[in-house]
Image (cartoon, rainbow, N blue to C red):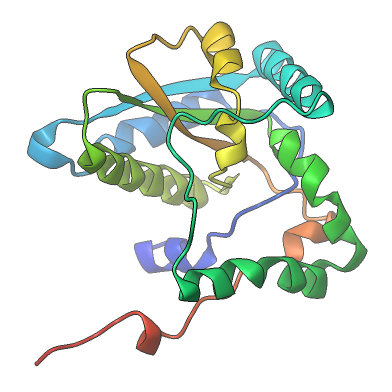
Length: 214
């Protein structure tokens, strides 16, 4: 699989098998991902991986919070408004998922709140001293991780809901206070029998986003 094939074939998977991901495979991914470029070679990523009983405790605590309507407290601010073009794209997700997945789309909320039942979740953190440029570097690192996973037959889905309750993550993963919990990436093997994984989100034509100035 070359880079182009990895980029084009990668999709956000919303239902995973329970099969564990070998720690050695994850280490291969992380060992390659450290080659991601960063400002002045700052390498601002701190990585915490939850699996097994630890992940189950996190999942159970999240579900309890959702049941009690505890508001999310993500440490990286969520957008409060979107440009008009982005609104159109985001508003199309629900209808497009219904189109591709039929009744299976109704699982989305439960799957989302349970981190899609992935056997492992990668949590990327960023020291609070970094500026917004650190988020750019962290995003580049996340892209490296998901493409390296794709090359190895693994599936992923970067998910803001995975970091909805950082207090729970800090307690279970011993994340120090100087780090912001930025994003979670559930990782594992896709459950191809679940039709929710039929969904492949659309992309805008390049004419709307790419501008050449000769």
